[in-house]
Image (cartoon, rainbow, N blue to C red; front, side):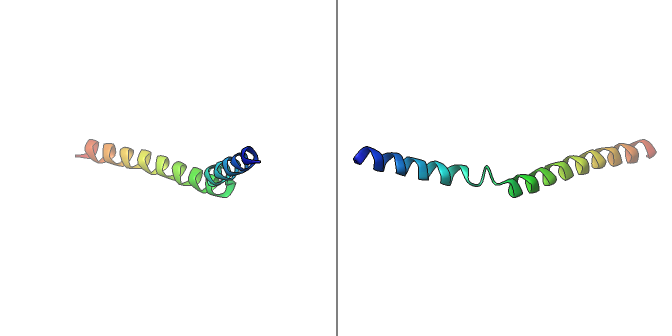
Amino acid sequence: MNTLLVHKDADSRLDKFNGPILDHEKLRQGTHIAVLTAVASVFLVLAVKAIYLIF
């Protein structure tokens, strides 16, 4: 009986831990933010290089 309770507790803890990681909407939002950050950083580097070449 005690081992079943321990297993149930372990499963609920794993569900709480994995819940946000497996949330597809949050994963999608994080992916969009990561892509936008990468694009913005590339744009910023190119802009700085262009300004450096002009002056």
